[in-house]
Picture 1 (cartoon, rainbow, N blue to C red):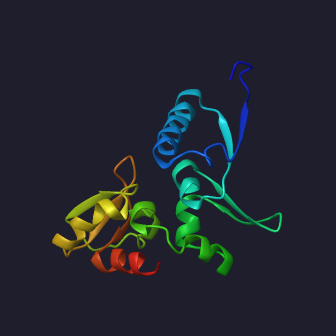
Picture 2 (cartoon, rainbow, N blue to C red):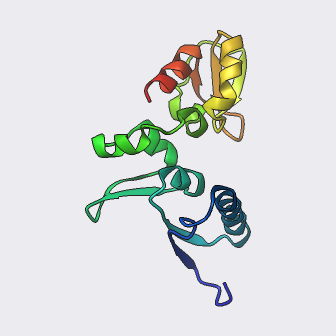
Length: 159
């Protein structure tokens, strides 16, 4: 950090740490990235760690990139069985958002709305207590799609 690099490379930096210290160090790295606004290339064999730390993930096999995408893209749409195996044990509700699983905007009037970045985990209590159509909105409040209970449950069941 003393030389103020544009890109920082970390190769398995937390692999030998116990789970508590590892979690603290992951959180510290996220805080550091938000503060310094640096590009960080983080190499890990722990897919859950990659989901937590990465805004873009590259999955490699035999030295080749098999899939590159956001955590949501990789979990929701694995390109092949190899990637699907990586995502098999991922808690989809914690990774997928309303925007990732929404349907195209519906002309029917939705009485309630939900932010696109809302995780399915946060959305579950709402769709269990409300059986109507939810408008999915972006940061400006514009409707970008819609979803209902069935859509959320199907997205969770696909894993």
